[in-house]
Amino acid sequence: MNRKGILVSSFVILMIVLVFANRSHTVNWTPTFNEFETKPMDTKVFFDQLPFWFQGKSVKKIHTTFYEYDQYLRDQPVDSTKNYISISKHYDIDNTSFEALLEYVAYGNDAFISAYSFPYYVKDTLGFKTAFENTDITETENTLFFEFAKDSLVYTSKIPTGTSYVKDSTAGKKLGYFISDKGKKRTNFVGIPYYDGIFYIHTAPEVFTNYQMLEASDTRYVSTAISYMPQVPFLLDKAVKTNPEISDSTLRYIMSKEPLKWSWYLLLLALALFIFFNAKRRQRIIPIIEPLKNTTTEFVHTVSNLHYEAADYNGIIQKKIIHFLESIRSKYHLSTENLNEDFVKKLALKSGNQVEQVQQLVTLILKMKSHNFMTKEPLVKLNKEIENFYNKDKN
Image 1 (cartoon, rainbow, N blue to C red):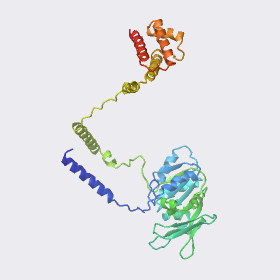
Image 2 (image 1 turned 90 degrees about the horizontal axis):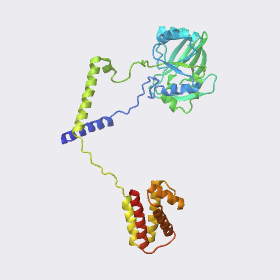
Image 3 (image 1 turned 180 degrees about the horizontal axis):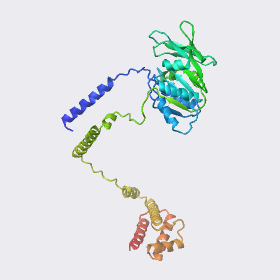
Image 4 (image 1 turned 30 degrees about the vertical axis):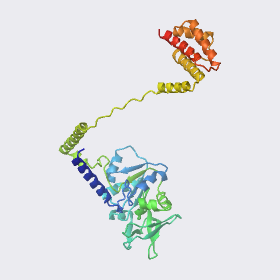
């Protein structure tokens, strides 16, 4: 790479480092109640735990309005009973979908809805009213209680919008409450029967967020609140509606327009061709790697020279015998454990040597294995006999 290319690359790397170094690390406390996100005010932790609390029951996510989903159900075989659950900042359901939900609950299903505020037609139909306990724009500590259970939850609110509560409920049964700053008992959890089903209205959705679920020392309050519903599968009415068939990719707009899509493909192709030809032109010469040398022969020569220089003729004789017998086992597949007459005949037959010559060599080997020689004449004689054996074998 030339000097100009090095300078350009260095500048690009420096800019990337500066951008990443100056990124804001501020935590996003926006209460979106998204079931898939891990921000503090989303609800992924709660919905991940839901199947464990309900013995592995399935959770079906509704990506459309409830009215559209109900129309889909009408075209399917008779479905089993399911719980309906919705957790959001504001329970945003249109009137038509709520009418379908009323019919669904009346059939014998239960609905758990947690939000700070509700549409007027929801409150009017179910017969309850809500109000807000005003608080300062600061973090406040709240405690939630149950009417018929000992579990409670102390949490510090991160959403400075005041505390919502059920002001009046003509048909509902009070299930939970909190104590206001003025010492008044405020209902925040009610159960409202509707034909064969029940609506559970909860006005503190923050306790189901990721931050509060992970920050709480005890989550029994949450599990107790949910346990009012039967052990059946769930229908999750998503707070953030997204169609799973629509890609979340950042290129979805480009891919949706035919000219832009083909322009993108041509750009990628041109980039790939540039990289291919540019890399080929500047590719360095591949060095030749010498193969590893076989040092076995060199090692044998070195060991032999050491024995010879030390006048250890007997050591060389014994190693030569061992090497010769090893070659017989490897080449002719004969056992050298017993160097008897049968061994001599088989070796002579396989090697093409005369039986008398093989017998002479074997006798010499047996003799030299049991004696200790101090001169080199026996070594010369053994080497000559072995060389004659190999010569006849080659012929």
